[in-house]
Image 1 (cartoon, rainbow, N blue to C red):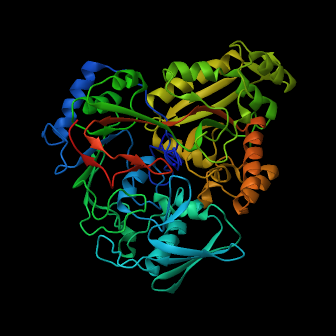
Image 2 (image 1 turned 90 degrees about the vertical axis):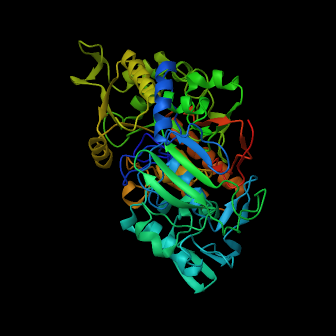
Image 3 (image 1 turned 120 degrees about the vertical axis):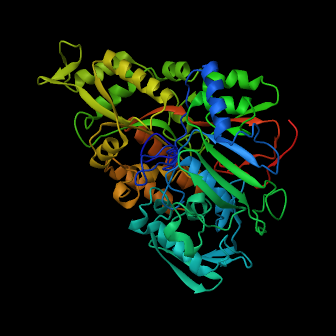
Length: 572
């Protein structure tokens, strides 16, 4: 979980942009937020309009005319939206970036993927892999003065799985969680019903950041953690302000300095309009922007005093998941035909001006466990698509040119949330629709308000669903495709797929400590997802950042979340 889909991530998202990923980036409300999807907008430059909107942003900033300087802090203009700052509830990409500054985790994932101490100085895993015992760092306090102890950890974990939290992603990260036991004030034990290899990496994510137990009920709007920054204010649809935690002294091992963060303040401006966001960077109203419009990438690369950063996001790629639980996509030949009917290469290249790479697997190449063997496995092949549809019995044609069987048109439904879908994704989706029409497949691409869209998603009243999720662990596939990971338990198997073969690979990989066995199981799972036509991979999402030359020591963590602890502002 960023995010276009209600389950992203964010990918939006999340989860997303959540969900995680895409990790849904934009979420239609607290329930189905998404990790953080990572799709990018490509609305045209519209220079004049951008300048005007940049002016409006300046006014929103209080007319200061400049965002820089360590005293004023750093201003980050983001395309994402914010609906809830509780890391255990939301899976949006932007929220996870914000929350990373507010909440520390028990452990951290180092650049090499290895797990490092953080709030826990050490830990032991029971011989049967079902119990993880953590020994907590002493002297850590939350922003409200509450000391970190085992009870706070237990409260956070239990909060993640509490149905009242309506977790979109965090609860799934705990795997077969059975509960947390307070051994003593500085020792806590997390229990599992069966071994779950991804647990430590999951605990390192912002989604399982440790919260002050006194603030859990209000954490959606007034989050309290122990991080290097504390929450100051949230102006709906406008901005979120954090300030430096002067007591901070428990930084990650990879940090470049010790003690409080270097920036006095972090301001996140919510600027969904592409031109305004880009204009804010070029005019100095923002020090950093995300989702650089792909049409502006070339100009940004050559701009004086600015930098362009691009990094592929781990997790699942931007893909269209097919609903195999109801006709006509319950027929594998129809799903495979749709995969081959769409000229994905051409669409991705034209819509995103060559900035994003075409995807072949549902996993991003930046994800451990990615298999490259699927490359070219589902090429654009209209003749093969026609043959598959003939074999599936869709041999007739109606007056509009669509294929028919027994007098019924070959038609699938693809609703999207109007407030969630981005302009570039709209263009891409319409391209998919046009390609499918050539093959005789009708795609009813419907823009809905958020409420209607969420109802459709929860009711399964759709055949196609676009999403991506940000996750460093390939276990994200289990969350999307395992039969027990349906939305009602915090999973994102939204079409209630039941595939025993996939279940076997994904569950055995999650329980295994054997790296080679896990790699093979994930490769087998990716291959089956593509070969069974459960998804149409579209493009590999990337972080596209525009950065002022003043910004120093801006880094990503292993999951590609921005790290602001070491950041300072100098001369451009």
